[in-house]
Structure formats: C-alpha cells, structure tokens
Image 1 (cartoon, rainbow, N blue to C red):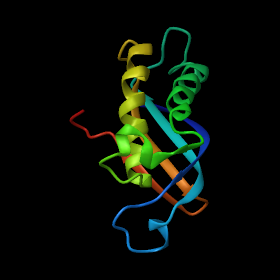
Image 2: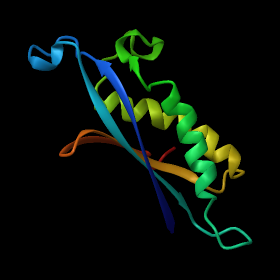
Image 3: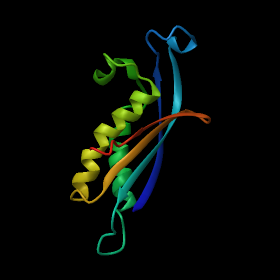
Length: 129
C-alpha cells in the first residue's frame, strides 16, 4: 500500500451552536489541512498520483471555505462548523474528484482539520466505502 500526504491551509470564522463556552462566540482559525490518499499500486511511470493534481483539487474545495463565515455556508446551516464537520466536508467533496482523476485507482483515505497547533479532527474512510 502506498500513501501520499498533501497539506494546505485556509482561514475562516465560525461559532459553535449550543457549545456553551467561549467557542460559541464568533471567532476564527487558520486551519491546517492534511489529506492522505492511498493506492495498492503505482501507475506506469511509478507514481501513486501527481501531487499537483491532488493539490489543485484540494484548493478547489478550500476556496469554498477560505475567508468565509462558515456558519453561513449551506453545508453548515444545519451542522456545527466544528473541525470534525470541516474534515468530513472536505473529505466528501474531495473524494469523488481524486477518484475520478485516477480512474478509481487512488482513494482518498483521510482528511485532518487542525484548528490550532495542538488540536485536530480527522475523518478516515470507512472500510466499507
């Protein structure tokens, strides 16, 4: 099994509904995002996938979040814009793009959303997916 990791970041504001603490107030983060893809084999030139393709696709998703008030985005209207839900949002939007670009040879494995240097949430592909 081969695995690639791509990282990027975005800045956004949010507030957590029904949190009953400081994070219920409007505040922002500079999120750091880690994306991992996996493949059982390499392509004919010895790559899992071009890093540039993964980066471009991740940027497409992060552009939807960057410098936004996340609570106002349709996806987060009925979901808290927590790091957990942000990781899941990125995963569910990025997975079909990565898999289509690789003709289903490469699978998005996990997405981590770091809201600070020491706190992150990760969504990992369910083995049944």
